[in-house]
Length: 126
Length: 140
Image 1 (cartoon, rainbow over the protein chains, first blue to last red):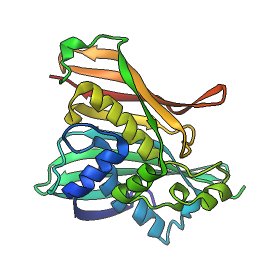
Image 2: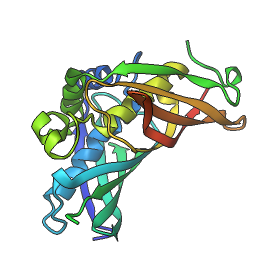
Image 3: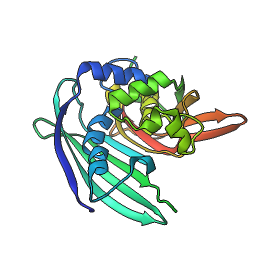
């Protein structure tokens, strides 16, 4: 499963959604909230992991333990972005599984705007 | 007001942003982010999972921390990197405090590396939903 990729997924963050996200996280002033990169990241990453029968991950057992972003260029509200995700690492520790996903978000011309890395723990029954 | 690189020194603190975590904000966050995990909306699901109430998304908390940093720099595009560890849950109804301090400066790239955190007071105790985490900002 390591190295498995999901996407590419094309999506647009419209201005109303940007305003709503900014209000929810308490951002003041202009500009897309930096962590709104979560929207494409979730849509192409965790959503596909949960739907992947090869992984069989139960959402009720998932904990988000680490998150990293590197912002290289601005995401524009209303502009098309393209996201893809790769399973970087799967590691068992005791009854738990640690899963690291890498995400890249590009603009329509293929320039990288954001790199993300998410680490999830899927708690075991033990 | 946009913060300039010359305005910043090592040890300087990011003004602490305190926010009450409301059910409405967490619901709005779920809708805007697309994370509809019932743990973040349904009290019964959260209690069944062993939490005392509805749990805010880790990314809601990280997003609020990012807002504290961006309020300080005055520019949403100043943030170039952020890495956080989620170490404790945040429960709806609690007040989170988001802050940080400048660890190092690089005049060549005009960037500052910050130690950043989110804390919450529970009775006499202070817990740290985000700690041992860092952010980097580039300033004009």
